[in-house]
Length: 258
Ligand SMILES: O=C(O)Cc1ccc(OCc2ccccc2)cc1
Ligand SMILES: [Zn+2]
Image (cartoon, rainbow, N blue to C red; front, side, top):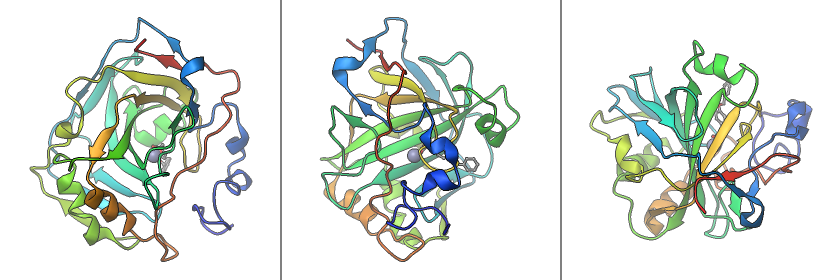
């Protein structure tokens, strides 16, 4: 199979051939149906402590644009449904070619124009890749933020301003060391959905504690257009780099809010 992607000939319907877990019972993303979620008063806010990175790249890997530090620097996530500390690994985006599509998770069937994922790995493992292969749903913790079109997002502007420099697959650029990743996050990380799931791209490992925030972040129309100018490995617009929702099977989706 050609390297996986989101086109007709290599998209989500093909992924099971290389990754049979694609048809597993704990796959992501899912449609978050408010009538079927269960409030859990034990779900406390999350705490993300992000330290500015001195050496990080913003890159186009052919299927997303991704902020990737060269090494850990003590940036970590704790609290919420998490039993231990998770180390920050990377963040990346999924988006559509118009404002009616683009997010991976959906809420009562509604898609947002984009979704931002902050990926963290369970610090009881020696590395990110070990955490992916550690078995069970506690290897990674991914924070999902829906993006909707509205005011310009000043915290994401240093990143969206770099997009023209990574228009083509395989390109990357150094991110200025004064980039403040913490500023992207809302002040309090309180209202979220959480469930056990998987990577939403191959290898589709079922190793993820998903934490999807109810409140979307806003980005301007110009910032959305910047994402839509990105080109994938086949020279086509990368927009549409989202996997459709997967069956919930017998999983529960819990909420930290009523
Ligand atoms: O945020 C997501 O879409 C989930 C997700 C998180 C991490 C991820 O890493 C891909 C990867 C996993 C193992 C080895 C190499 C690369 C792939 C998908
Ligand atoms: Zn993602």
